[in-house]
Image (cartoon, rainbow, N blue to C red; front, top):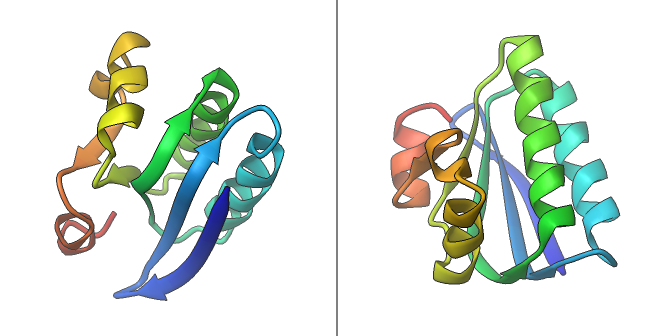
Length: 110
């Protein structure tokens, strides 16, 4: 998994690429939780994710829950087809706020 973090329009953008699996999900978890701790809206760009397993999904869920307790926005954007299949299978596509594009996520402030 590769990643990048940047701030734009008052929003933390976390871009994840490649496989988010058991090996890489601890890094993804730490990265996401660190961003949520900053109390800025977070948009996770999943357009480059080729594979995500349950540990990667758990990292997203934990970060989403922490953001809710802190009163921050946490959303997903440009979710790849393979990641969306997993989210739908777990019925999390109705839990997360999912933007069709990163631009759309930024325009809604996370």
